Length: 335
Image (cartoon, rainbow, N blue to C red):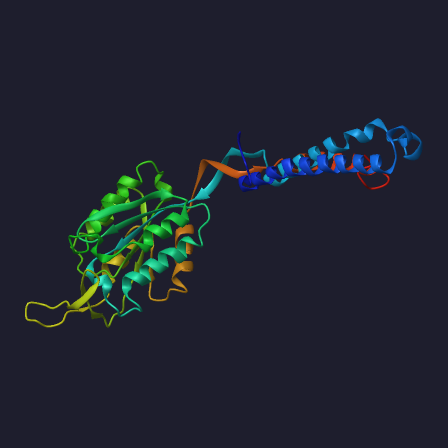
């Protein structure tokens, strides 16, 4: 069991205790001066109602009641415990194509932005699944390990650009090899890949990628980004549009979505091909595909809010206030 402060910012409320002590002390002095001004001390016993010895404890009771009330607000002893549970979960690596063709604007605003938004929308629908991110073109790189920190994942995704990879192309095999290295500590039944690509400029090694995926127990959900009509590929230098990609004859190249390899990789690994052009429907379809075959695995789940003990501090605080209320019928300090 670990212990930590629940609402540690409320520790500043403890500064109220010296202030309250100062006010109580000055109130006592003020009341004493009023009595002395009214009559000499030798007449106080006959003029004023005699206070019980218990009322002398009221200042301490007020301070203790306030102290325990602050402790209850802070949630001083909020426990975190690790529980071993048998739950179904996926380990999902998003493999994002960042080749230059993903800059094509046949999908608004462009293919890459569409794919990035789709990844974020899909993660927002996940719960316990671990996610990782691999980007690839002619080479591949892991930019985020498997984690359940979806907020961090969004930060990584936002920073992805096509110039992240210097070697261009669409090398599915290199991407799959990188995924395998990230899955080495994951049971084969829960290894899932979500491949987002326009499928263009395929290096012709999709069969090798399929063979490796089947050997490692990886299921591929492929998502095709882009239109069949296609669009020119913008070329940027330091963020400035310099023109559009052209062939050797100087003709503008029209990049079109190529789905053959994407569909084959999904079908050959018992996965699903999804049309990624509808960002409203595609995330739900991706989640359905991922959950179609889920493995049960025993894991340690840490609940940061498993046990709270603020109610005990609140009960003590109310007890002290109750004592003051019962033994102070005049509803004042009665000091």
